Image (cartoon, rainbow, N blue to C red):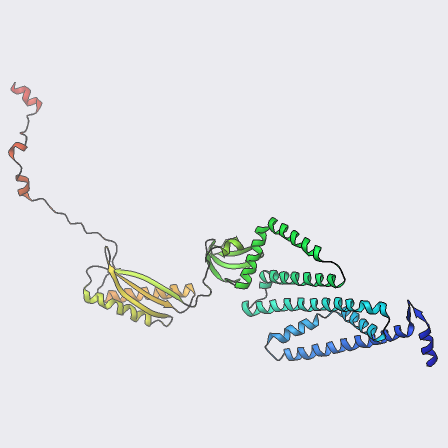
Length: 381
């Protein structure tokens, strides 16, 4: 055995003894095997724990560990073997740079997977579907990953001794030029990002804006597509859509309804005073409504006007229309039973005849005597 060690120590390869090379390979192999087995064990345990819990952090950690690159593990094991074997100053001087590159790349992979899984879980938690990520979530993921890998690349180049000052400056100047050239597109991109982060509306929401009224079908990188009530698809840029007020009807908890009606002027004061109580009783009899107020509002041009305010406890428009119909029919029956008539636009015209005495008041000189017809005048002559 001693002779084998002496022979290995006496033989060199690229300036390194075979003994140290063999030691480095043995240590690297053992380290790589230990890391792979340990990673598989830890991932399996975490996956088992995640299947029994509802917290998303377990799933995120499992997905992040699954993104561990085996080649980077091998490089890490080789670096550990070189550290243990002490292959000489030539290798030792470069180990720090190799360590930094390997760690930076693996951290980049882990963070990339964490971004993707985090955005996916966020979409599932807030939207309840997986299609949203293909639109707005993709933009957010792409933006974060681009920033991440730009930082990793610059850090690696700086660690390797590359002067990145001019590179960063050129990137800045080039970025400004590109931004000025495509400022409209970038405006829509950032507007899409604002929609993702601020969530004024989501896919499936029923909204109203100056562009139209309809259901949001798709939120893209540049445009948002709305399916109108009449069937056509409305395509509007994200920037223009965010510049105007947007009404989101899906987030309505309940619907406030104000409606008016009028009865004829022949209605007695007692009957008019009873009408608000009639309306209140009809509204409170409907379990889907909540009464607010009913008042004799004003004296209209051709009617006694009443105003009623109530709430529909569901935001669904069809339910509101059904409730309003029931209320209208009930109001017709109640008022008909009391002999109260609904008013419609009418106008009463009073005709006043002139007094006969006023006609005789004119003087006789103001009345010209009748003239004879021309034929009679010729006969007299």
